[in-house]
Every structure is written in C-alpha cells, then in structure tokens.
Image 1 (tube, rainbow, N blue to C red):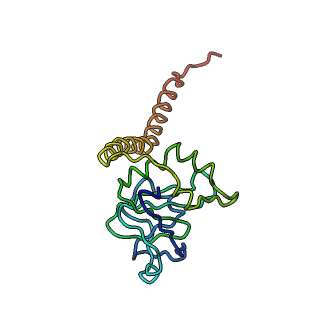
Image 2 (image 1 turned 60 degrees about the vertical axis):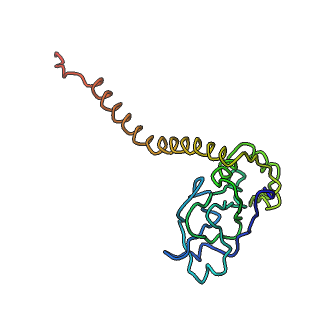
Image 3 (image 1 turned 90 degrees about the vertical axis):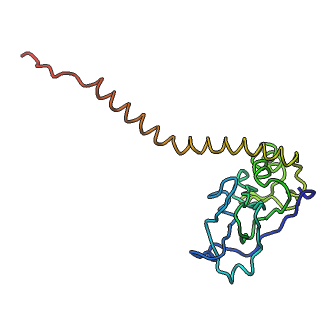
Length: 196
C-alpha cells in the first residue's frame, strides 16, 4: 500500500463534537456500524471551529477504522466519494492514492485481507491494526480500466444483495400471510352436528 499512496492519521474528533449541521465528518466507529463500501454523504457533522483542528479526507480517499472490539471490524474502510473534504476522527486513517477507490475498498473486504490482518492485529479488548501493517499489505493493482470493470461487476452484485436484503422481509411477510391463509382454509371444516 505504501507504494501506491499515503496514510494520514485522524485526530481528536469525538462523538461529543458532533453537531446537527456544519462540516461533514466520519467517526471511526461509524465505519463498521453505518457505512458500506463507499459514501457520498456523512452521518455526522462538526462545527467549523472543531473542523479547523481535524485531519481531513478528500474525494477518492479511503477512511479506515484502525480499532475495534473484534477482529472482523478492525480496518473496515469506506471509500469517500463526496464532493467536499471531511474531518476524520482519531483511530482512523485516510488513505490518499491514484487508483480506483472502490476497487481498493472492495479488496479490503476479501479473505486475503482478513487472513493478513488476523495474523497482525494486537490487543484483546481493543483490537488494533497499526498503520505500518497496512502500509506493508500487498494489493494487486491491475490497470485502471480493469479496476473499473471489476468495480462495475461488484457494484451490480452489491446492489443485488442489498435489494434482496431489503426485499426479504416483505417477501417473508407475504409468504407468512399466504401460509396463514392456506392453513386456515385447510383447517376449517364445515360444522357438523354431533348426533346425540
């Protein structure tokens, strides 16, 4: 990773600094609770005074959560594709590069990265992957055209999965209704008079 870009460590942004509007920001904890592979809008904002003290990510940067309570969530990342720069919190890193940001974000969801980080994380209650470990991670870099082709395919799969996940509760409810209807039909018998 160190050959294709640079990491910037976030600083000082805490949840208590959030405001209803202002300068967009991403807190590291939101990366594994709110964001998917990429984002164009943030969930949170900070005042312009707070923003002056914060490190920033720019369009195309990846924002990594470098700590978590479990190995699966540590170093999840989101590709920032919004038009404005955003503030990033401590325990996060912004990665600036000249590759396809979604390609890199998708690659960090692979088994190859999961295996890599499992062998290099530190901590027990708070799991951490240090910047130096991310810098050493080797990622295949095909041409930008090939990266775009891969991203296009993965975006289609991600949309399909998202549609299924959103559609599944409605489908389950419809099947449940259908089941109840047929159950009631099958188990309703004409009333018979019992002979005395």
